[in-house]
Length: 117
Image 1 (cartoon, one colour):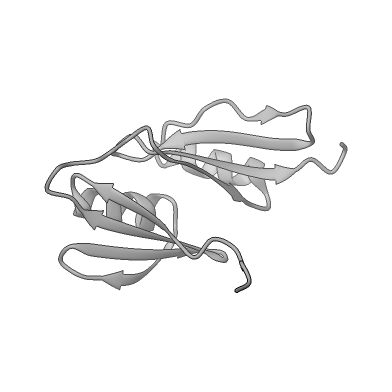
Image 2 (cartoon, rainbow, N blue to C red):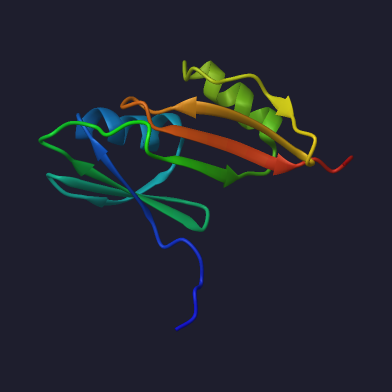
């Protein structure tokens, strides 16, 4: 066996259409699976699976950091779409990043390597 990386991240969501809209229309991720209880979206080399959950969302148990290019433009784009984003920070380990939450409270962050570090 060889570990090759993250296959996908699965999120139990309380309102599948609302979450599908957030990830596809606000974040701009590519909707590849669209079924009544499941939506799958690609973002770069990553993949997220949204699962309609009768028990509702399970926030707080997940944080995923996504590597992006052009973080300043992405920060401004998400703000312009009404996504509540945290402060864009320059971290001491050489990463510039910001975080945001999806409609169910799952935390994501976007980051890029700070070329000046």
